[in-house]
Structure formats: structure tokens, C-alpha cells
Amino acid sequence: MTPKTFGTLVLFTGLVACGGRHRGLETAVPTAAANWHAMATRADRVRLRGWREAWTEALDRARRDNAARIAAEGALFDPDQALAGAVPPTGTYRCRVFKLGAKGTAMAEFTSYADFRCRIDAEGNESSFYKLTGAQRPVGTIFHDNPKRAMFLGTLLLGDEVRQMHYGRDPARDLVGYVERLGDKRWRLVLPYPQFESILDVIELVPEG
Image (cartoon, rainbow, N blue to C red; front, side, top):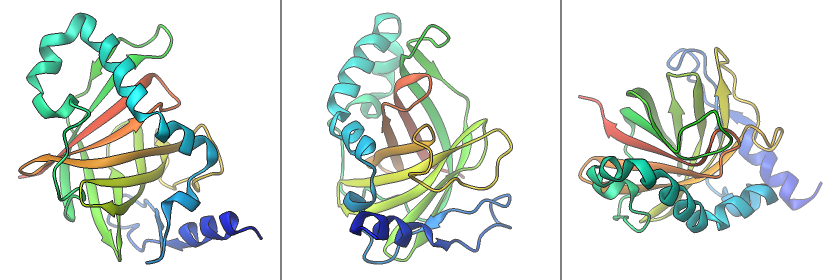
């Protein structure tokens, strides 16, 4: 067994005992010694290294017909905006999903969706992220990497699926990104180069209530 394989097994052998809380959803829990660098697939490390290029291309294309809408969101679409406190506290969040830069002809260059519900749970030294509603639902682990940027590894649930596919099993479902705090009770999850529809996905998180 290679070190990378062992690291992946460490990440995905434990399951959260939260099926009843999240519509039967199960997600992987890392150990305290989890290292996202070792666990990320080679393809995802490449995607993450290209985060700046993803922002640049996606924003350029999205601004062509939506400059005012993008400007109105302030820090949300500023790739260099980040404050200390990258990991959102445990709780339920109102999430807005934005897709910037279309892949193919089926999507617009800028797409925004109505509010969804998301959940953050603390899991030892890491946290879990769940998008609870919607046809496409990212689920995964937030690694407390540094005060201004937390890293995210996860997979994509589709339709009425309730069981997360193990990260690394299907590249089309794997997700990589990062979490940043933008202001008082406002965070974002950034997913560069997702497999479907867009060049960059941005998910805004604001606590419910």
C-alpha cells in the first residue's frame, strides 16, 4: 500500500453518524493528522494550482453582460478578498450558488440560483460541508489549512442520491476548492474548474436566521 493510498483510506474509512440529521447523508471524516495535500488526486492538485487562471477567465466572461450584477456582490467575486477565520462555525447556512464562465452552449456565462440550505459540522480538527438541497450537492471535508484559507475536498451528489461517493473513485464527481471569510458572518466556497457547466463555482454561505 502506497502512502497516498493509505492517506485516502484514512480519510474515508470513518463515516459521520449523522444520517438521520441530513436526510440519510453520510460523509467522510478525516483523522486529526489528515493532510489534504497527500489525499488530493493529481488531477485535483492541478485544478487547484490553476485557481487564479480560473478566476480570471471566468470573471472576464461573466462580466461581458453582467458587470453590474457582479460589482453589486462586492467581495464575493474579488479573488483576493480573504479575512482571518476561514472556517465557518457549525450550523445551518443559506447558500447562494453562482456559476461563472460557461462550459459548452447550454449555460450562460453568469448563472445565479435561488437560496439553498447548507450545513457545517465540526469533526475533530476538521469540518464537514453539506449542501442539503438542490439537484447538484457538493459534500466533503474542510481542512483547517491556515487562518485565511481552508481547503476543501469532496464529491458531488446528484438528484436524489443520499450516499456520498468516495473521493478519488470517480474523477467526474471529485471536487476541490477552498473556503474563505469575506466579512461579518459571510463566507464563500470556491470550486475552480468543476467538471460540469462552468469554469468556476462560487457558493456564498450566510448563517440562517
